[in-house]
Amino acid sequence: MSGEGSDLEVVSAHPLGGRPLYQIMQIMMFWLLDRYYSMYGHVEKLAEEIKKGAASVEGVEAKLWQVPETLPDEVLAKMSAPPKSDVPIITPNQLAEADGIIFGFPTRFGMMAAQFKAFLDATGGLWRTQQLAGKPAGIFYSTGSQGGGQETTPLTAITQLVHHGMIFVPIGYTFGAGMFEMETVKGGSPYGAGTFAGDGSRVPTELELAQAFHQGKHIAGIAKKLKSAA
Image 1: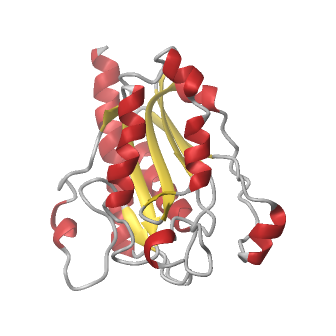
Image 2: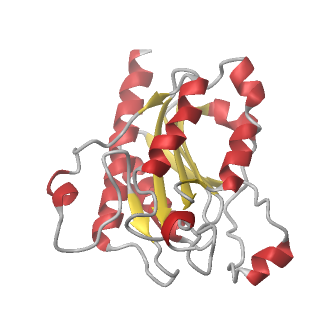
């Protein structure tokens, strides 16, 4: 579904828009995890750039992880979803090893895809013990259209971070002139990097990828400072 319910590896004919993936970054003794769900690869493309951006910060090691798929194979086949990535699947408890996390997912009717929400719903044990409290976290996403949730998706996702006591780290306008581009279509917002999936054939532009790289570098830098000050 382009519009409200697609993206991040899910689009138009691909209702969920994305495949599950995560990215973890290790800064010396600390991990900055970036996990994302992407069915059609749009969010995965952003995650790869975010990983590069995070790894560009001295002492940071970035890794990708994906969340489990919840749809049966027969449904995925009807959606023409491509084969799953070989990126490792993460378990909820592994999040506690990270010193920072960047979450990525496609939009489903203006909110995160159900697959990713299901994963977060399984983090109750971490919530009870407050193991994610105080960790910096960012968000990136993909939607099927310009009005399909580029701001509502990250805005509604922040509630997940708040309940865990995490520190939301937006990119704000630190991306500079790229935030004000008006001549070409560009996803993303002050909340985080983003892209448009359209009918599934559109791929992230160089500007969108550059914004994703910036987000990874920006959040990794902040996470490193927080870790050093602890």
